[in-house]
Picture (cartoon, rainbow, N blue to C red):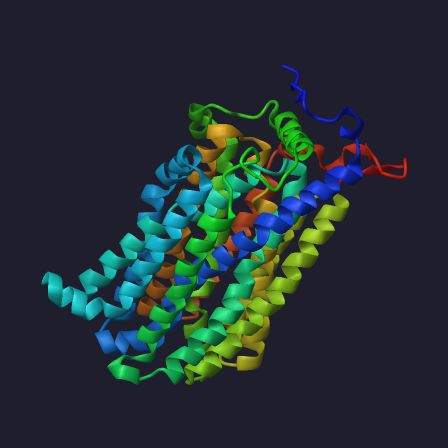
Length: 464
């Protein structure tokens, strides 16, 4: 079936690329900063448990195994409620549902600071309370990331998504850089204030940005193109016509999301490379500490270095992919680089300079493939199939949070060296690179390289 053209679209502007570029720039400037700040707040709450671990275990008398299990319980809650959450977002609207997610996860994340009092109140062990709160945190946050990916699919055709995705995912290294420094400083500066430990203050203070952003989302975000009062009728018509054309031929029924083999290939890729990423995110502070750094502030500053380097690498890789229109190698090569970096960081674990250098290589590789990867679900799914399919991909893929944290904990328990698990994490990245190379070429044949007429009348290639 040929895509229907909106009758309200101005014919003179149907092929006006300058008008189209201005409109998409307007959309990006309106929604991307809000989503970026939301993801920064989300990731701050998600990985600050790695810093809390530095002092929390002694205060709560938890072993590394208890910590690893508690850290991973988040992902089981996330896994079970991911697809239902994304379907609810599709039904109820992104504005309300994203705000709900942010408010509830902030409150639960802050509640972890009071694990012992809450355990006493409910008459259970502190470890059980820790597991319960982490599981509840996963339930509350379920649907945020795939919801944002789905939301971007409501606005941008596939060939425009990689540049937008890299802008959104820039929040990840920024939050890890700032989060490392902020977490280390809070744990040092707030230690003992009003009788609370530094890690408790860190969890409380770092939960506040999510509450603020929940209000911003309600006030500033809109659910879809039709509800965007800041767009003209011609702009809305052009955006909807582009989406309608882009969605032609994609899976759109709910059942297709579960039965499409390409969806499950994407699940395996995410599961393997996220295992390396979450293992790195959860354990990097401990890896640096094992190299002889004892100050929480210094650990935070050193942790910021790999993610700062990774932010630059991610942008350069996404830009080069946009310019060339190639995606398979721009995702697979960073996966292999990340694996090599992790292996060498473990091998030189007792040399802090070399360890941080190769952790930077590892983080650069892992983060560089992410913007490229997250354009792929939109190449095969649309509508409710996209809502379910992206939820499936992210829910199964995020079980890597369990595997990533447990691999390192088990390796330390079995061998006495926290760095031995890093070799397994590196192996996961090598597997991910191989799976990326197995992606069917037809899946990557998007309008990214279709010829278009430029405003000056020349012929060029439209970039992804």
